[in-house]
Each structure stands twice: as C-alpha cells, then as structure tokens.
Image 1: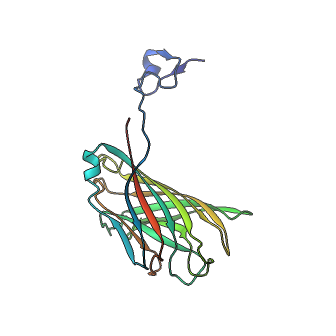
Image 2 (image 1 turned 30 degrees about the horizontal axis):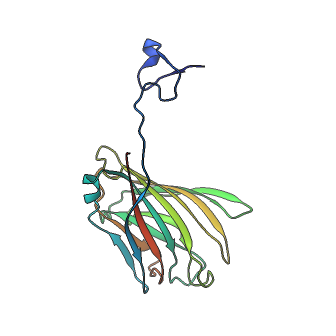
Image 3 (image 1 turned 135 degrees about the vertical axis):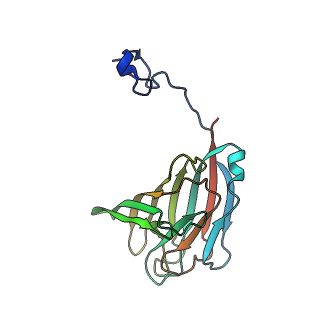
Length: 205
C-alpha cells in the first residue's frame, strides 16, 4: 500500500509515494572515524576530550564513545559522569532500563542533575574481578546543532561478581555546540589503569 507523507503535508494534497522516504532526500553516512583515544597508564580522576568544535568544520555530524572502564572504587561496580563543556548547571536528565539475567527494571535517574549525564553501572570496580572492565557505547547525536538540546544513548554492560546490561538515554538541556566532553567517576574514585575511552565521529557520505 502506498505511503502518505506527513513531512511533505500529503494529508492535505493526498500525494502518494511508493517509498518510505516519501519524497524526502536520502541521507547516507560513511564509516565511523577514530578521532581521539585515551588509555590510562595509571589511575586518574578525570578524562577530557577538548577542542571538539574543530570536528564541526571537518564535517562531522555525530559522535560515538566506545569505552572499556574500570574504577578504583571498593565495590563490584561504579557509575561515571559524562559532562559537556564543563557545565555544572542543573541541565542534565536521564533514565535507564536494566537487566541482570533474571529480572528487568527501569527508572528515572535525574531530571535536573548538575554534574553531567551519569552512566549508571557503566564501570566495574575493585572487587569485580581482576582484569574485568565494563563496555559502553555512547551515541551523542547532533553535538553541533544549536537549535536543540543534545541527546545521548548508552548501551553498557559487564559480567563479574554481578552481571548487568543497561540501555540508557540522557539529555543535556543546553543548545550550545559541544566543545569538550569530560568523564569523571560518580563516587569520587579514580578511573583505573588500562581504562580506554575512544571518541569516534560520523559524517554524511
């Protein structure tokens, strides 16, 4: 059955399309490009990627963070903040869904946080088991678009003394273009040695 285009006001002119594009221009994206990587050779309190505005002029439209994170917290897991442009105003919100293999739950984590969007259970810690790191993929959409707030999507998980997989979403309620991204541990501990955080960029083909 033909598709009627909402974006092109087809409900008014009853124009019909045989494609899901419905008359809109197709946008194609290439492969992700590695832009920056930080690998810790010793424990460190904070990790920051700076001068990100240069990637806007290079044509990048979206960012992706790929991380393997462990902290020095004396527990079996940890959280960390993702803060944009050093902003510590009450401008962050997020929620999550979590599964542990036998049960699932969801919750609203914060509506006006000040330290950043925090990645809930996005890191292992000192009692997680030797060499055990949590893996996270964080998509940061339209980081240079100044007409809307910045949204992020997080997929993270780990296995060890406990196991978790989480799908999270976050919001930075600020329309400024992103110029820096800072990561710091939620409980005040350090990121452990061999923690790796990489920043990738995606541009239209």
